[in-house]
Image 1 (cartoon, rainbow, N blue to C red):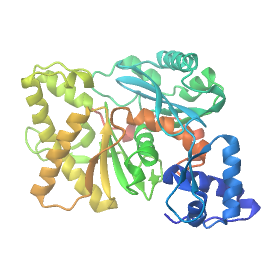
Image 2: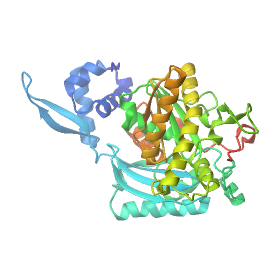
Image 3: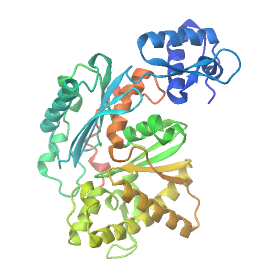
Image 4: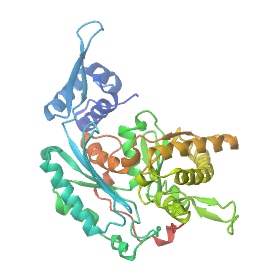
Length: 406
């Protein structure tokens, strides 16, 4: 990766961020290598690195032997240099994680609860922060902030089992609620965009520059990443693959269209199983089914793979990413099975499509991505977006919302 910088005093902050990003992505890395990549002088790099060492953001890990001259000292991000808390609230759960600067999870609190109301969310968040402090999972003085991954239109999209009181999320000041329980900065983003950011910084995005991320949770979401940067579109809702229309192949609605999100999500699968006499209400339940239940899930995955394969082919034709990644709360085993079926369908079609992979984040993808947001801002990484510091979930856009029912 070729980076460019300036030795001028006015560009000090940009050069510092560039060096931090290079250490984050390229560690272990020497000062000489940083100089070559950034095109800054070795003296300038040394000054920046010395300040970062003093701040505790980077550390000298080891000496590299086997080369001519004095062994080079390798640099890495100091895991203890900064911490972050990330949370993902959705229609079926609340997951809160505490991570260090290397993205390693230091603590995790999970609540498997359907349609959690705003006041309960705020109480559980306060309890989680208190627990992390009490157990010394995070160093309070080095906490970069709290990241929240939350679906837009949370209280408006009519999913299976939607209770009327869940509309309390409409217009709820979730940012204010988090700021009331913590003095630290609050960062908010859409759940699929957060998951994609986590993948950029700590997952397959470290090797794949351009990809489309499909987040399969209670509902379906997506995010487009090109050259390591998320592209949200003019109105900020780019990537919403759940709204992509697909055609019915059979039944009374044959030939008509339906959003992909009304065919593929956890809630849709649970509803399908219930209509076939099989009870499952959580991802864990899907791993404990009997033979009949597993066969039913496999039939559903095969059916969905046909629609998903066409969507992936369409994504490839429109934006041509290197890969499509699928992550979310579906158990890893089921995602892997689905990928096999999608590959088979793309081969049957004889179509050209991006490579297909299971995302690294998997079950906690959105929560881990939320935690990555404050880290990205603190470390000055390119994935940090100023709007995350002020954003609130999108609401009151009824005309653009598909009704997600089975």
